[in-house]
Image (cartoon, rainbow, N blue to C red; front, side, top):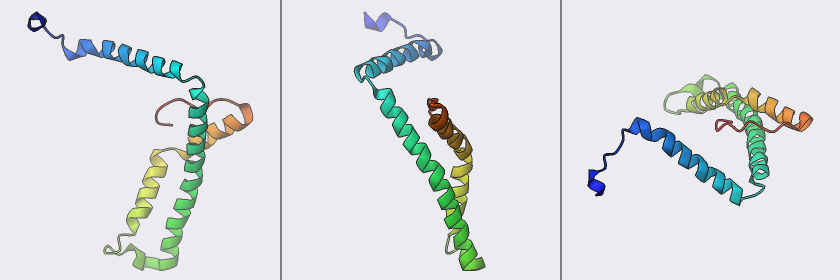
Length: 118
């Protein structure tokens, strides 16, 4: 009997899988009352760490080149990759947006955004 039922194309399955996933997610959240407060606290702590670490890491990497001079950029030392990585991470994960949201949380008690990228 099951062999006779044709499977629908993937494009038609997407709304159903999304619906079932969202129902499962809602059921999970319903079982854990107050999880939103924990998620907000965790997001705030992570954002504070991100804002702080970006400034410290960029300053440390720049100071490394200032102190050691041009010899720090030699290819065999491979120290420039740290500076590039810090710059890339800080520009792709916007610190200013996080700082604004943290200020809005502290002053206006407005919750942090719930997007996955925050």
